[in-house]
Image (cartoon, rainbow over all chains, first blue to last red; front, side, top):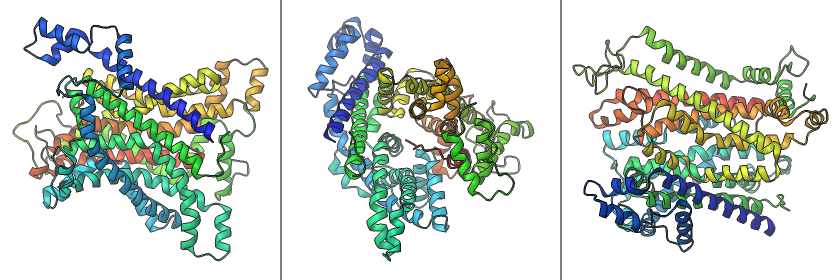
Length: 317
Length: 311
């Protein structure tokens, strides 16, 4: 077991190194040297400022040297300095990340807690009206472009009825955002529904698999009540694969988060990344990409390890 | 040619036996991988409904313009933002284009991109996955770590990055979308190849002198066809969705091109004016198309008993 975890950790480190290589090379191949400096400095650029910019960001060195120094700085927790925002990438991420944890995190948790009971009820009442309705709803949610769902909610709850504001809170600090809960309702709801559509399918099919087991029939044959069987046997066993699948769906959750941030103008990492891409602010793009790569790899790692811990039948040599 | 009961065939034989089908004592008349897919298909109503829906949408998009003539090239500023009427069944947009006609043209690019991406991505993924699975060992480890690395970066971030560098054209969009969509296919196919490689019939081919290309092309790929087809179907749906999302984020095909995603995001600008006909038709078309392909994928997966999880 410990050997398995160590092996998985080593693999994760290799993958993370790969993530830094690919994203660094991609973002440095596109634009570098004078053209990049010209694009960043703008119409007031002159040979002296261009030269200064190139020296300041070390763009005069060959790519491998730049990667090595980037990696060295990264290992010291330094992600570089923005071309545009006069801020270190670290401080940008430190300012934006809590807001994302709030938005994406709360939607994630809500979705899990909605998907588990509904998905399990669907499995227990398989092929009845409730199952068909819930499957239909998650199918449509799943088949909608993520922003369209937010648009529908805005159209229904803001434009026509004025119940909720169509824009996310615009405060720059997390405290300011929390103090405006009305603005958070629509973005969090949108993201919750998108994630719910993804998760409820996992819960339903996993519960169906569990229900087909002999020990469920045994438990029922013993005369245990349905509630007891569901709670003690079905719930626990069907959550094992669900944990893994949810851990693996991390990139999808982050992707939906980016789109929702853009749609509701929520000032988080996704929107920052989007704006950085528009402004050729490669250090910020690179920093956020690597952060998300780390989050994904750690998510997968936790999913795998939790699978080994939760299910005593799983043995890794 | 291949051994009596490959996993796909065995799996298909089980539902064929359980479903009440009086004619047909033998297990489903297996004639080959494709006829297997076909049989599995015909048994599944959801998949059939999906196919029917796709056929209808394709007819609407490609034959529709021959029946219902509209001008989607020249703006008509005397007829902007008109509500649905006899002349324009679904109204007009901000530039006076007829929305019904525009839906047809927009659907063409959605279907073209979706199918082309699924084809390319499946092709790359199958070749990559079978080679990694067949060769195994160090090469497999390196090849799959590369897949892990690219999968660790959510594709939308790469898309946004790439879209700021390239000016989108239809071909380029297809290439970029495919180059980032083959990873799941590669993983699934590699797992199949790993499972098939030690089987007796593969050993037998090797014993009689069959080389790697023959084993991969004639045995590993045909025996993984269920997984490949199911996954390709989901990829069409995903590509149509990603295309719509990218368009919404501003990385759209330049003007003469029409996309459903573009119609939807253009219509969004008029949400407050109550021009509902500019928003909902395109949305309904996207959802219908994606639902149809997902129906086919789900139906095929159930029939072929393919075990795969969507990301």
